[in-house]
Amino acid sequence: MEKGKGLARRWAVELYDASSSSSHSSVSDPPGFTRSGPDADDATGARQRKDSETAWKAQKAWEVAQAPFKNLMMMGFMMWMAGSTVHLFSIGITFSALWQPISALRSVGKVFEPFKDPRVDTLAPKLVFIALNLAAMGLGVFKLNTLGLLPTNASDWVSSLAPAQEVEYAGGGIPLH
Image 1 (tube, rainbow, N blue to C red):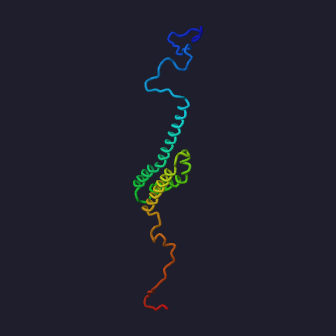
Image 2: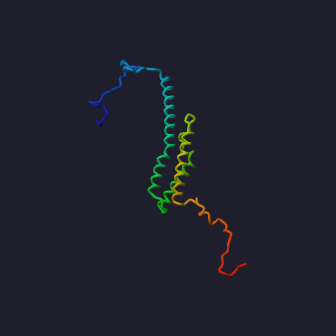
Image 3: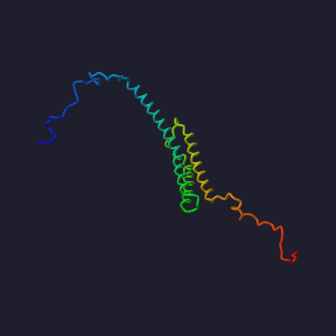
């Protein structure tokens, strides 16, 4: 005889009782459980799911909006560790600090696309995201200034000035007219 066919195993228990065809058994409901109609449960359950999904989207939108703050702190620490002398590492860190916020600002719409819902207000998270990225870009510009790579002094623009007019002439004993 083939294994598993024909004979019932001694340890198997049949849990289905065909004698009680009704959906309600003779066992009473546990304390605290109230049986209600399926339509009311479905409507409230669907509303609760939509509300929880809306709350989840709003929470995630705020988390995404505040993510540049962590990057801002890390980049500030890296720029501080790079020092104020001009060398390859400090220039690389500084331009990275400038490029990351620029690329993040260009993709604000893509970043907040998963949270697009008429019930979720993404204006405030977008504004916070933009403000934090502008602060990160300001940090990069400040680092460029401390490295002396920004033309902020008059001596940086000398090459574009016209030569000064000579006011006096000095000579060595021979009059020049």
